[in-house]
Length: 202
Image (cartoon, rainbow, N blue to C red; front, side):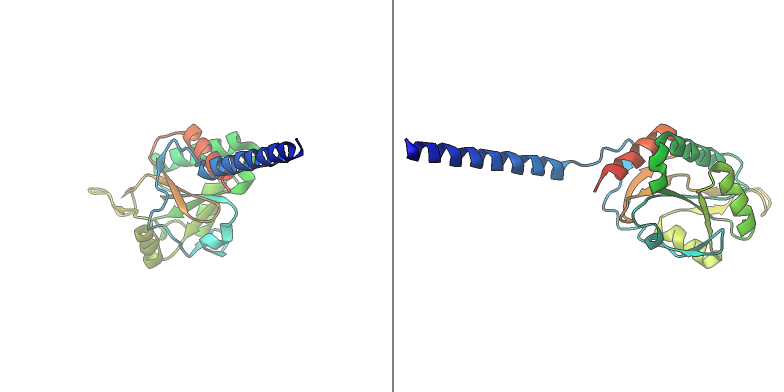
């Protein structure tokens, strides 16, 4: 009887241990479920070095521990840029306190016109925590290439008018890794959902 009791206790401990391992495995296998396009593992969008609208040089390392949202545009953009920035501002409101762990970055593709003062005025009109980033022509071209962004003068208009450019938004996780591509017009709910998924991930 004593042997039987010892055997039953040992068997119970094994079952508890296996259940614990199973739970840990389930947690390890859990992955974020994105509403936009999952680009986890992409071999681009690794880093950058640009000045923000306060004059401070920035790279991805500055935002480690935060989810980073990166959008390329310009302040004179008549439609897509303000619409996207408005969606991001609304997403931050929807996230509530969690928005404190998110950094939205607006990278200008028009550095000649988009001065630091203009960038500051533009991004803060949407959310005071947003940062505007800029560099010289070469630095702008380099970050655009790194993130596979295309921009050019719109055909048939004056040089100081509209630019054609990629309209998607990138979301990077808290380790600075590219995870999500959000195509134009997805809306605040998609932004808020996918950002929240990354904030939950450890």
